[in-house]
Image (cartoon, rainbow, N blue to C red; front, side, top):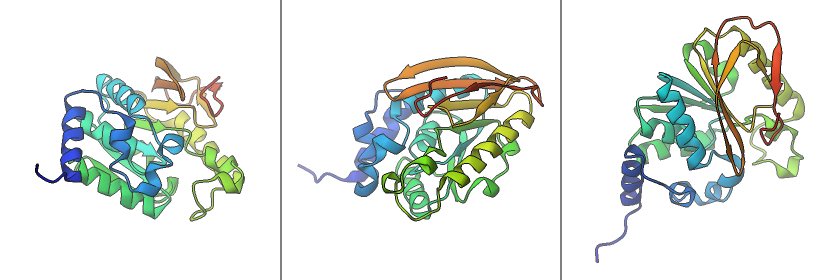
Length: 229
């Protein structure tokens, strides 16, 4: 029997994603470093959620997706593997960006899924026609001992400032921009966005929106950490 090689698993998983065949979270997470694999269920998008979200975005014509708080790259690489989306993931922790880039190479999507070390200052939201937010700032409100690690400052004041910044940016993005939230993002969605899709998963609610006009006149939805309004 020939020896088992991890890159064989990666090729099989990538082929399954492209063919829209089922892939389990355990299979995908096995491509991550062991210390990150153990935290995946808590911090990173489940495969079923990622495939649903990417399908919605592709169906609505999105091509340039920004994943805010990309973590180890699970959502971004799945979205890239599923179709024509080009994904940029921003992540403050450099070791997670290293893991995300490695995952993208393993799945053969490094040309479509790129990762940047930094915060919201590192990218321009208006250069993308879709945004993905998996409650990326909630960690800042956790007790210090419950956070992923202490390599970056993710305290409450920083988290709230990021939420406020996303709120302001959403209201001014161009008509046609798509927004996907999983378990919310801690802030409100402007009334200029039309809700296109909703799906419930064991971990929370997934929603897809589209900007209808700039400068919405108010705010109409705020979700808690479980995606409940």
